[in-house]
Image 1 (tube, rainbow, N blue to C red):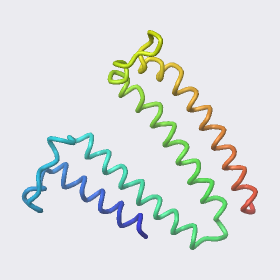
Image 2 (spheres, one colour):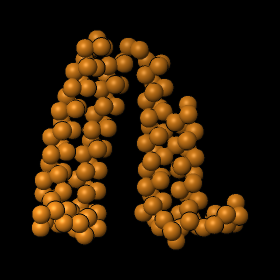
Image 3 (cartoon, one colour):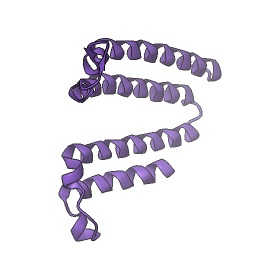
Image 4 (cartoon, one colour):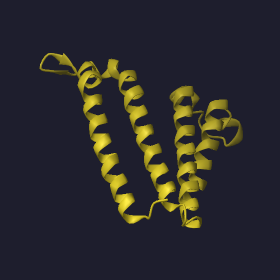
Length: 141
């Protein structure tokens, strides 16, 4: 229940930031020039993920018969979100990371060429081990 409330609060805050009505509604400093629309979208996405986590936790408590499928689905969704974040996020910040050099190579280039691939392989092994643990704990369909 905590996740649902916090997620709704984050989504509401992102809407207030994106509309620029913080000074009118609450009398606080407008955060839109500081965060921008991308920051507001990131806050809204975090709120959506919190709401989804709360709804999944609630469904796990109510539906004990479908517990295996719900836990597997949650694990798969988190793996896909992590892989998407790696594939999209690292190239977006590569210019900033290129300011650091490791043995002559810019860090952004190195992370985009090697680091993301290594992280995806580690993610695959972590996902497989956790899925094996879920399979061992819960009876399957």
